[in-house]
Each structure stands twice: as structure tokens, then as C-alpha cells.
Amino acid sequence: MPFVPRCLCGLVFFVLLVLFIGCKEPIQPPSSESITKTDREILGDKLLGLIKNRPVEYPILANSAEDTIVYQFVQTLYNQATAMIRLDLNAPAGNRWSQDRDWEVHILNKDDVIDAFILPAGDLLITTGFLKNIKRENELFYLLSFEANLINEKYLLNRMVTEYNTINLISIIDGAVESNGIAVGQVLKDATEFVFNESEVGQIDEIAIPSICRTSIYRGDGISEIIGHDTDGTNFWLKKRMNYGGREEAAIQIADEIGNCGSLRTTGAYQEFILDVLD
Image (cartoon, rainbow, N blue to C red; front, side, top):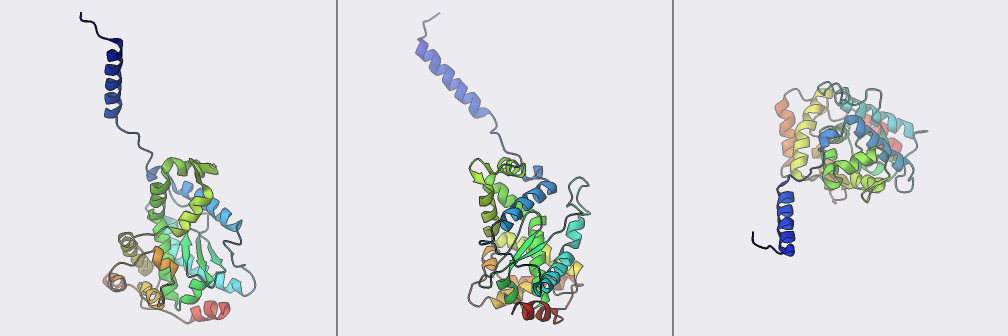
């Protein structure tokens, strides 16, 4: 048997080890399917808790005095817009939204900011600046429906999984303040600022507008008027929910094709319960 130097034997072993490792399938983190709606509610509650503890950054309008009228009006529309989503009848029995948990509206006292965002559990935050920028009920109803479908269809969750991976999210859901350098505060900041591209927004519109028609008597094309008010490009929400070409016309077409979509844009209640109160 020929003599083989020890160093050569070691080299051969190392090469074989590298080849063996390279042939193995890389370990993939769990998909978003492993995060249940209960998990999403826990995460949403954590983020909402942070918001409530940061009054300078997130100045929540007190639900008292005249402002209670504003809360009641917006919350009533939000309950209506999300009623079918929260029932969750088509979901598996073990993975449905909690029936004893409300999806609440929180109004941020920021007159100079036109913005809104939703948390993973369904709680929605909207600025007084956005409420003043809206002129009619159907515009608000569109906004509420869009945001609710954005989380119900897992667009927000999938973005979080892409940014942080499932393992880190589950760790935070289970109580960690930080996971692999990702802090809960960073998750909150990102969740309020995520930009959804034209393709994603178009997909959500195709779901949200029919849901408006199923739950209300409002026209489903409220986005047309929201875009129309943004004459100076200061609507931060529109920058995060990016416009696609012909979005206004597409919204009208989707509503028209449904056939049973309502025609109401306003009853004057928005002026009375929102604009006159916040003025």
C-alpha cells in the first residue's frame, strides 16, 4: 500500500466534509403559516402597549368631552367595515380572530400629519390631520376597509417575516424584548412606516372594495376622493400605500362590476361628527 502523507489525508477529509455539508438542504426558518392569529393579536397588543407608553411620539387624543363623538363615529364605521373579517367564518376553527377582542380605533392628535396605520391585531391609528383631510364618509370607509384587509390577508405579517424572519418574530411574541438585535421598538417603528408597492396595493384594492360593497351602502371608490384631496403630496399614507397607474379608475371599475355596490358618499354626518368637532 503506497504511503500517503498525513497532511494529504487531512486535506481529503476536509474536502469531503465540505462537499457533504454543501449537499445538505439549508435550514429554512418556519413560514408565516406558523404564526397564528392569536400570535398576531399578542404582537399587536405589545406594539399598542408601546404606543401608549410613548405619548410624545404617539399623542393619543383623549376619548373624552366632545372628542368622544369623533371616536364613536369612526369606531362605528370601523366595526361595520370589519364585522365580516372579525367573524372569520371561512378560517379553520383553531386559527380565527378572537371573538371577544375588539378592533379599536385610536386617534393621534397630529393636525399637521396625514397618516394612518394598522397593527397586526387589528387596532387602527389615524391622525386628526387625516380625519380633517377627508371630507365624506365613503372616503373614511374605504380607508378603514383597506387597512383591515391589509392585515387580514397577511400583507403586514408577510412583510414582517421578510424583514425579521419567523423565528425572531415568534421570540418577540413569546416575550423577548429583543431577538438577534431586533427590538420590539424597531418592529413598531417599521410597522408604522412599511411601504406597500403598487402590485400589493392593487391586490388589496381588489379585496377591500368588494368588502365595502358587502358591508355598507357607500360607494367603494373612496380612494378617488382621497387622492383628489392630496394636491400638495403631503398625504403620508398615500406614500406608504403606493398608487398604481389608473388607481382611481380601477376602483370605480371594481365597484361598478360588483353591481350591488352602494352609491352613497355622504349623509352629512361626517361634517357634523368629525369636521365640526375637530375644527
